[in-house]
Length: 137
Image (cartoon, rainbow, N blue to C red; front, side):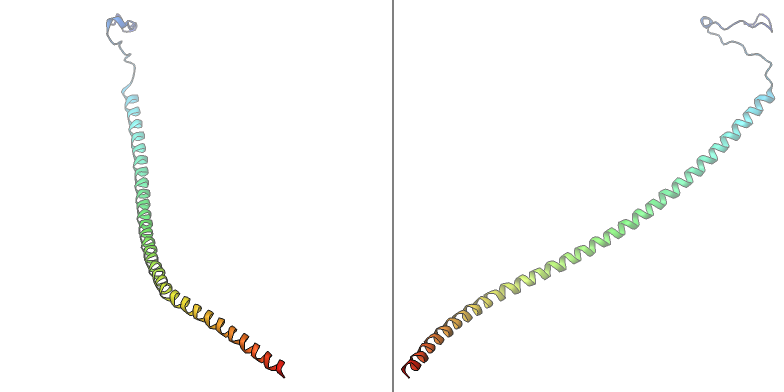
């Protein structure tokens, strides 16, 4: 592949061979680059781990808030249900009382109407009798 150390053969795609690299690269440059790459990887991994911890903490806080809100909503629904039941019982009691009271009230009003009518008729006849007595005098 190489004719001369200084003149490498150019890459030819038809030969399916990799071109040779120059041997002037030093191992110290490669090891320094490797160390820097590993430091960068460790730094990024530390950032990822820190973000992961922050995310887990936020998830736990959100879960705690969710559970707290769920408990509050359940207790509110239980209170509303109890109030609804109590109000329904009160409405039923009022309805029952009104059903028992209305016939009595109706009968009483009918009686008062008859009494008033009788009283008015009696007053008219009594008034006519008095008018007749005064006219006779």
